[in-house]
Length: 341
Ligand SMILES: NC(=O)C1=CN([C@@H]2O[C@H](COP(=O)(O)OP(=O)(O)OC[C@H]3O[C@@H](n4cnc5c(N)ncnc54)[C@H](O)[C@@H]3O)[C@@H](O)[C@H]2O)C=CC1
Ligand SMILES: NCC(=O)COP(=O)(O)O
Image (cartoon, rainbow, N blue to C red):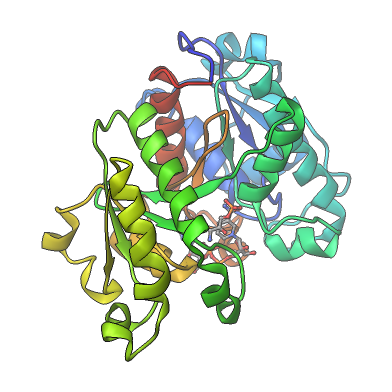
């Protein structure tokens, strides 16, 4: 990853235009001076932003822009690199016709980032079901971004999802798969690869010299010696032994129900969990407004708010922008620390 002096803007993708992405984008931009936000370039449909601003009664000066112009434009306007979605969007009413524009915005942001014209990719939420209906072949951003990076660089990247808040960082080992498929997906290799990527990124990008990885079990009480499930002792424990032999401070498997209380969290820097909800429930319960979704293992920085499209409140002035602001700030912070290519 290239070192940036902080002049290139952050790219912010539009996400699902019927969701709260436009609301939180406008709210963040409106407070850019008070929050000392670094310039961002919105990649999406200017008409969507204009109509949402009217609905929310937000005074908006929008400027069609480019990565090179965005920094100068940001003080007085919201810089937009136009990616039309093709229909008149109604807040709260997702439409499959917008899927192409949603995906194009992500592709554009990644391409600009790989060319070092933007510093990082910050994504607004997408509605997975809308994209699946349009034939999108990835579970979410995380896997799509890795595929785009792999194609651009000609080498394979394995992405790792991490939710990061002030009180907790947590990684789901398996991500968007049915719960019934989780036990078979939890393999020794997956534990090894995931923990190695976490260790490398927390060291190189987050500045932790010796990150402590607390790894959960899969079963209640981490299997209770095998009586409540075999995977904890047969799969997870041997992987952790190998990681420790490599010098990675990974310990467990811990019973998941007792690893998130205040005192337990002081013993580690990141919790590695076996499935989506085991990791995301504690993060969102502790800090829904402040936590950020960050993808590890990519050759560029990607962050996102931790929430989804929240169609039920889009365009109503109820969406809080804090998680997007935290995502923009984290992307800025991570791209000011040097990373390895
Ligand atoms: N990074 C991404 O692209 C993500 C996308 N999603 C997608 O979002 C869609 C909706 O998912 P849900 O599970 O309903 O989660 P959600 O986060 O959209 O909404 C959950 C609840 O939190 C509220 N909420 C969410 N963000 C808020 C904010 N900024 N301010 C105030 N209230 C807020 C909503 O109104 C709702 O009551 C799904 O299609 C899912 O795939 C979900 C999570 C992340
Ligand atoms: N539940 C987290 C989520 O859905 C985010 O997924 P992604 O789109 O960032 O891969």
